Length: 270
Image (cartoon, rainbow, N blue to C red; front, side, top):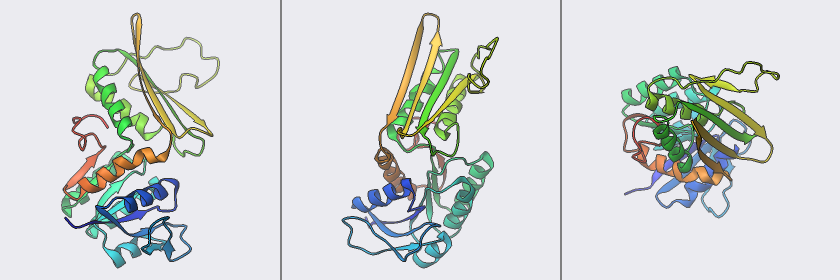
């Protein structure tokens, strides 16, 4: 099997840099090019990698020049749909870790993938442990009436709650088939203390310098609680999931949302 030609969009970002290193380290993949809106030079330097990797300030030029098999996108929500359109319309498969996409965005990506007979994987979280945590939470959701989510991220994260927290709540609600019970507070002395809530699932977001990402789901019933927690200590934790998605997306046609199906964990979580 020949190496899969990979391009990384958003290569100078925190996640993009990790993806670049992970692709270079995998013998089944070859990093052919990269792009980032902040690019100010013609090549990207990768430690321990002798090949010159062209770096472009825009994805359109990259695709026109190199025609990669897979475009991996870790940019921002406002640019992600445009990136997906460029990749799929021009013959590249798509792996996207950019969060904040709307349902309409996902629908369009799915339609484009089908039309151009390409695969697309869009995941709110590429940490395999987080995906398994979400799967376990969806199982527990069938047996508890009350649940809350606490998610913790670094202080520079743009959105709250996280895409993973929302995806977890969605998976729990789908598995349960009805809203959770949400205890109403009679007197909230500090507004917002109870967090947000989605169909009875209270979601609390912590933003602090120091952590990368953590999430716990707490279920409660008479006389007991069940806590399912996942902690991410570095962005390296996302790379096995990204590499898995790159290798699997070239076998697909259409959109896959989340890693759960790639891990054979079922349909409604991940």
